[in-house]
Length: 65
Image 1 (tube, rainbow, N blue to C red):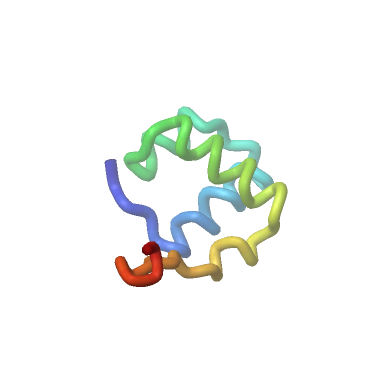
Image 2: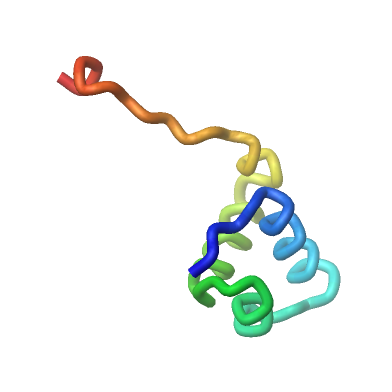
């Protein structure tokens, strides 16, 4: 399974939205699981493309305690 770049995610969403490409076709093209494509499209539909701008948060052990 490949890690997708932000541009890959935008391309997947555009292909799905504008050209009605299915999750199976997109999963083969980008080398990811079909469920990952479905989840990505649902996430972008719900929150918009701005959801891709957020970075992941990692917490230190001190903060967790």
